[in-house]
Image 1 (cartoon, rainbow, N blue to C red):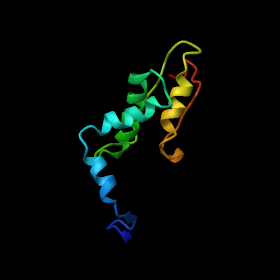
Image 2: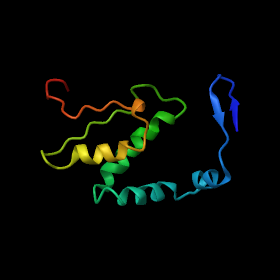
Image 3: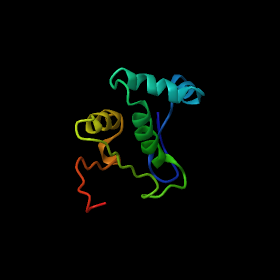
Image 4: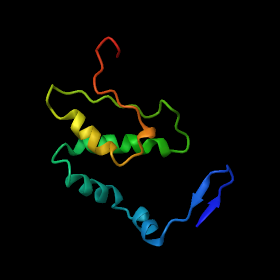
Length: 105
């Protein structure tokens, strides 16, 4: 059932199953195990990308609160890991630059 929130946005009711999962103290591990199914290894990288993306939901964050640059040698799979983590987020919630020249940084 949809309701109108105070700010005019639609507010959706959360099912008890989803609410139970969100309250699980092992939620981060559960999510990471799902990433294991698609991304072998790169645990720290995928966790960091995921946490940075979740940072936008922090109440006092700003547009510049959560930025991330992933740097490694060519062919290390940076784009592949990043793309596969970002797939779970709506594309309008992030900006990805696959190649950044050093003078830009």
